[in-house]
Image (cartoon, rainbow, N blue to C red; front, top):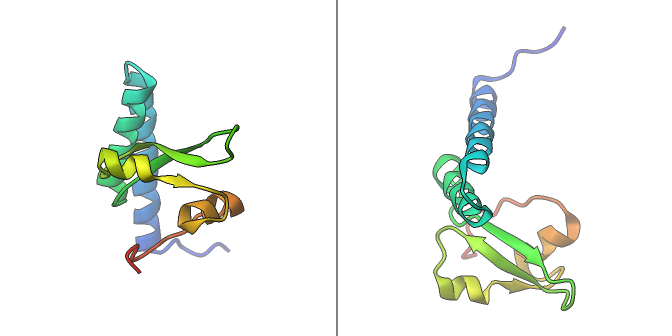
Length: 107
């Protein structure tokens, strides 16, 4: 017999599915990819409570990763967002392909 899903877990799963549906609609309705990415990052901040969602891309020539788009970061902060595999939280996540939840980025 399967166990009932706890209410908090069911609520979180419903919120995640709702966000995925919203993201699919944003991607489908955006006039271009830059606008789609911007809208998706904003939705992730608003709906999932992410403080500064970012899209990081790998530069094949330099081996560096750089922030391509972000929500909640200034242009200067985005420009400084460069990482190598294993460097800082972003570099470690990219190196291991494992998600990380950082409760207090300042620490």
